[in-house]
Image 1 (tube, rainbow, N blue to C red):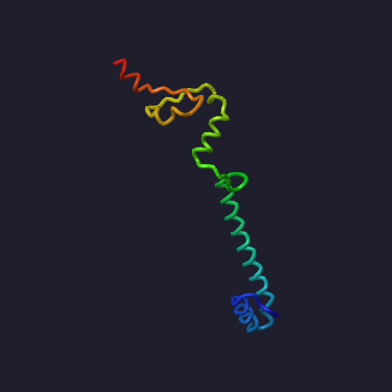
Image 2: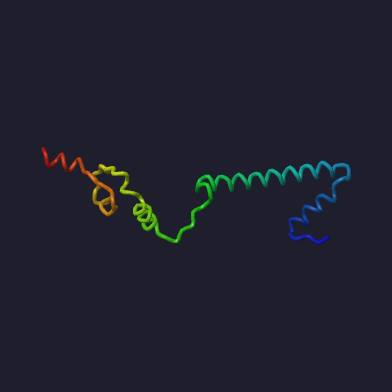
Length: 110
């Protein structure tokens, strides 16, 4: 029987030194261990998928700014809503987005 790794050789050597009556229990332990490891790997994969969405990680060659610009262009005018912010400079390039700076308007009035 040819083994693939040094660990397999060590494990088989250890198992071969055990008395025959305990081998069924060792088999149960090994299978339980295998099930636990497999379950942990699956949970880890599920956690990654949950944190990145329904279909796993999103692969895209575009920059964040390009993705946001694409999303913005395909929205229909943000539903006619107005963004109220003191930071209009940051948002002024977004097509279809109405901006209002109440702080600046209040200063002009008073």
